[in-house]
Amino acid sequence: MPYTPIVATLGYVLSADRRQVLMIHRNAREHDMHLGKYNGLGGKIEPDEDVLAGMRREILEEAGIHCSALELRGTLSWPGFGKQGEDWLGFLFLITAFEGTPLKSNAEGALEWVDLDRLYELPMWEGDRQFLPLVFDADPRPFHGVMPYKDGRMVSWRYSR
Image (tube, rainbow, N blue to C red; front, side, top):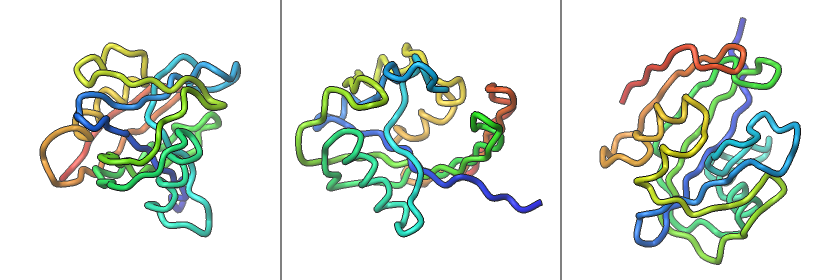
């Protein structure tokens, strides 16, 4: 059976001093599968856009800012992650410069600047704790990972660079 994942972006916006990251606290929609968790910003790629354009659009829609410097930090395949067991393929970006002032919230929840050294104290998907160190590390090589999920839980994790 061919692998036909939902293609998406996931971005982490750094503050100018690189000590904080803009996260969304998914606390606005009662039936959100991410309810209560913190996450980066992003979403599905539109049929007529490339992944970089999709990342820029999602950051603008969700945070109200324009990305001026982005780094592709990796790709991640999440087989079985969706609410109905759908497969997802994500392109993960670090946004190192932007123009504008981020919104305080959007339709999915509150936007919060979080100190990088406190990031892992937040409620988040268990799998995020595995790949986030690779998003923020000093290794310039992108990572490419596979993180299968079953019944809302991470089954395994592996990556290469």
